[in-house]
Amino acid sequence: YEEYTLQVEPFGLDESWLDVTGSPRGSGPQIAEQLRQRIKQELGLTVSVGVSYNKIFAKLGSDMKKPDAVTVITRDNFRSLVWPLPAAELLYVGRSTRQKLRRINITSIGDLAGCDPDYLQRYLGKWGLMLWQFANGLEDQPVREVGQKDLIKSIGNSTTTPRDLNNVQDIKLTLYVLSESVAARLRDHGLKCCTVQISVRDNALFSFERQKKLAHPTSLSNEIGGAALELFIANYGWDRPVRSIGVRGTDLMTTDEERQLAFLPDIADDPRRDRLERTIDDIRSRYGWFSVCKAMMLSDRELTDLNPRQDHVIHPVSYFG
Image (cartoon, rainbow, N blue to C red; front, top):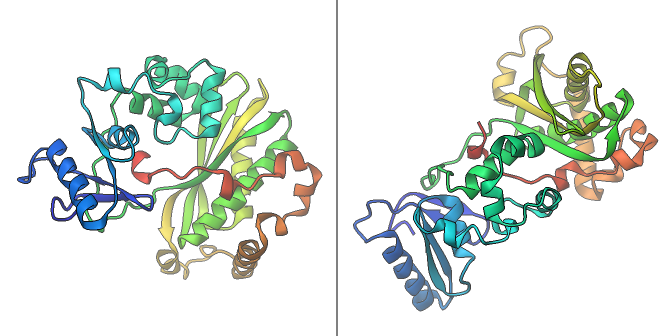
């Protein structure tokens, strides 16, 4: 690929996006055909290549004429080519999102494109607006250069609960399940968060977000969960039951950066608690997420029988502000 461009961004195990704008090797469709033929001749493999003006439609095109073809999606033809396709064909529309879209009679990409974006945002949160932009060909993230990595801006988890949440105890259980995942993922990346953010959506699809600065950077689940619960109690009026809730750690810093501040009082995490949570991480990696849990999680398994580390969808961080 690097014979054609240095803007090569891997996607999964066997796919990549290439930006060949202005390439002396030819136009996008010409280069796609060259690559298809070279891979067949040199490796004996067939490939399907999508060509478009954005990454979402290029990926969609690569799936349209498998196993051995080039599909070109342009600003002029995407409505006729893309909009009749099932909504599930759009990148990042998984099973859960597909089911939610079906509940509001959205079955095709065209249905999604024609929906009121404000309604989608209320219904699905920020992700709803993003999917609307994808369906309308408005995705504009650049292809990264070889070796370039996005900085992680935040780490979070959210869930639509199996029932409406009507009291603080239900909220606490759910927030702490999510916070355990957020904390573990922060530790995986050698990061700590300086700010905790919650997102809440009630059963009438009204949503809001609130955040608070922490006294010190942390990757401990109790501190993240405690801050999230404080935010909820201070900001939710219980006009309606809660149906979806999320926790996110933002304003991230590396553990090395945090150590530089450790000479200040009350800056560092409790080292004993940190060792304990890392030990729990190790046990869960060996024996499964549910091998260790807080005692309070046993009080309502309907709400806490959730592995948020497994059940969340990972999205390219560059799509999030």
